[in-house]
Image (tube, rainbow, N blue to C red):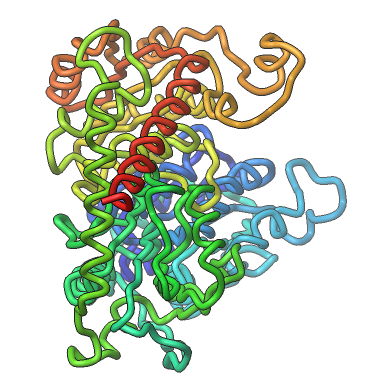
Length: 576
């Protein structure tokens, strides 16, 4: 079965230990020795699932995870949830007991067939009497179905494989098998045949003569489809003259015309609604911004949402008509004569860019170049210090939001990744290790709780040694909660219930896994520390300590100063 999956395009397997899964492990090990397949081993199934997710996200190909039976399968659920919501192809291959051992109290026998079903594109199973009851033709058909379901609708697929004993062939039996082994002839395709396209869009289309705005949310699609998406977005922005509000995860082309980089700080005062009402073209799911949601809600119904082949509802505001053709197919349905840049759209873009310049001036003073590190200042400086093409993974909660607000000058200039499907902190480090193994040098920007939550990811990092630079923002707990209006009786109660600061030394923990570390004391340390970390070409950890209480207040102060500057500028414009 694994050979047939490899023939279809499977190149990477993440293997977890287990007895019942021994036949799959031995087969994977044998195929890896034959070449053409990379095998990664991991002791933690949750970490393994997210590592495979990173490999699949970066490569655009489905990656397989192999586990044994029982609770091992349950540990795959967080990664399967993220793969489902983020549309990432993932093959979950789980060993199981045969039917005769089900529902009779046999050890390590559970109803694992149901664990992942709610979030998987498909659940398949080999015969309950054991895999040996399935012939080669049936296995070939099964592998093709798995591959097509994982890539055709981009998401996780679960294959449950009952094995009857004996599970462990002797060494001589294994040697005899592999000495006679012949790879499958021909070359399998990396992509499955495309599923039938949805019904052509016959819903409302923009009135290109009126002003509008493009809101580009997180990119959800296969890597092979990204170039066409980027070309369509480039042509749309250039031809329409509409402003573009980019999410950090939008995977937009570099130097995209019309980008309003500081939109998060400009809301609500900086993006007035012209009359007649502004048209809205939304691409994919919404960015994680309550201010943007409130602004879109105020614009009312009639918005158009285009998803990349995902027919599930992606409009929590209930204001949009959804088209699932994908941006490239939708854009190609227009002729150049239908889309023209008129005075009104260009005037809107000019006005918004003038307001954005006000934001830049308002931010010029509050950020020192030296001294103690604040999280907004760190985000402001990082893009100027990082190599232009270096991809960045942003941990959920504060890092991805701060990057959106304070690293806005970098918007669209590099590829950024994060958990925006389910927005969890599970598997943060493991996913970054997977991305780095596939993409090369990568920066992971994470908080202390997210890193500690996935500390087993250091096992994967130290074993495979990808060029991963981890920049830890250690603010003594969950900094995101300090930005929410949560009433508590005291600071101690707040920490106990929400922030949950931990006593673990993250530098010592990383060093225990053989990972080099450095502690940053001030902003002046940042350039040299980044240079050192990137030069290592292996996993390293940089730690910077910040004050989450002071930074929460600083964020509010910065937003207030920006809004005051925008209101003053608009007021003086009206007076003029």
